[in-house]
Amino acid sequence: MNVTHLECGACGLHHEARRLQNLCSQCGKPLLVRYDLERAARTLTKESLSRRSSDLWRYREVLPVERDENIVTLGEGWTPLLSVQRLAALIGLSELFIKDESQNPTQSFKARGMAAAVSMAKELGAHSLAVPSAGNAAGALSAYCARAGLEAHIFMPKDTPRANVIECEQTGAHVTLMDGLITDCGKEVARLKETNNWFDVSTLKEPYRIEGKKTLGYELAEQLDWQLPDVIIYPTGGGTGLIGMWKAFDEMEVMGWIGEKRPRMITVQAAGCAPLVRAFEEGKREAPEFPNAATVASGLRVPRAIGDFLILDALRASKGSAVSVTDEELIAATREIGASEGLFCAPEGTACLPALRKLIAAGEVKQDDRVVLFNTGAGVKYLESYGG
Ligand SMILES: Cc1ncc(COP(=O)(O)O)c(C=O)c1O
Ligand SMILES: [Zn+2]
Image (cartoon, rainbow, N blue to C red; front, side):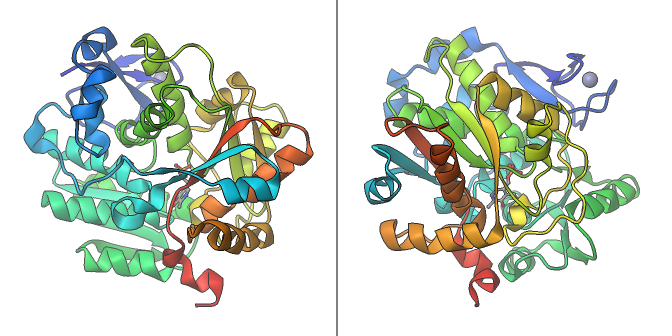
């Protein structure tokens, strides 16, 4: 296929592509997949897309799997980009869209990353995969491992939403619930993986989840007829989706699909766990661990992100920003979006609405800006947060 090598996102060191590996062997930072895009663009043309499958594998030439038979799929991707005019009118914008990622297998955008990561793990010969997760990544890994005939080992905080725990059990994973946060779960995976021969698929600690997630950027461009929006508002934990979209835009530009204009990228975090917002405001390129992280938006309860510099670079390069919202604000927004548009969004997704209101109030988003909010998951997975 078209993969040429893996490249460290920090020091630039090249790594061989056809081998299972985690972080940069020199500096310990995330590895990014690089392609021969000229070659990819020979068959992956805008015109060819109309004849392709309605899932993320429509962008096959810029995905890392070499052999078709290694693709592990449950039909992920190609989710609707919904125009939400009633909500737009409510907050005073002329054009607003929601990319509804709850329509993925396992009901969240984590399916994209895990489809790619599990396919690659299978192709490169792994048998057991392990992940620390805030919930949705666990559900997705369990499902894709079951589909691939691989073993999944899941480590989650014990107060992870029940639905995530149950879905992992019912899709055959080995589940460990821990006192502590996702960072503590990550340490446990790191401690156990060598002796158990597990491949660690933690966010950005392997190179392929980001490749699945980047298809968000390809889809957005295609669904908007190759005119990227002015503003993207994205609920950020580890940041794989945001980094992935940013990467996709560069790839599309090299292939001649879009110009150099980029959307302003906005990171949304919960006030109870906002390491990136804090680092952005302080002008830093690294985001130190956020103390006593707490929020009902469990996917945003990520006190430390290994790809912090990649996220912060993208926010700044795009002239975007980082905004935090309280749990009260994001919970209230659930009903507002639900009652006006019929979408029961995950709390991570609903956080985008109060963030947008703040940006409008600050004059950072104007009435005629074309804005896309990301609903990254499904409200039904979080019944505890809504009195259920
Ligand atoms: C529903 C949902 N939204 C957003 C996020 C944050 O995603 P990322 O880690 O890609 O920033 C998560 C992560 O668990 C999630 O489950
Ligand atoms: Zn490096």
